[in-house]
Image (cartoon, rainbow, N blue to C red; front, side):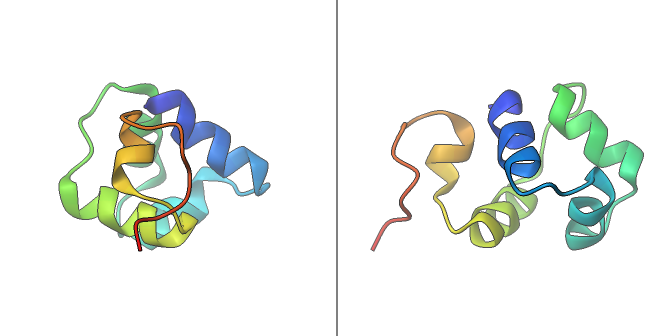
Amino acid sequence: MYQRLRDLREDRDLPQRCLAELLHVSQATYSRYESGALDIPSGALISLARFYQTSVDYLLGLTDCPQPYG
């Protein structure tokens, strides 16, 4: 899951700071989300799925299909 978050961010050439602002957390907190040092709250996962236009299941690694559910 954590590598997928990093890959999505890097594919869009975004710094961690941008995602931290989206989630209203510090850059250090977002960095901990990506590294797996800190569990990501469900609300943050939902926000990230909406931002990346994918599903929470994709972010969690439960599916390899990046398309959001209809």
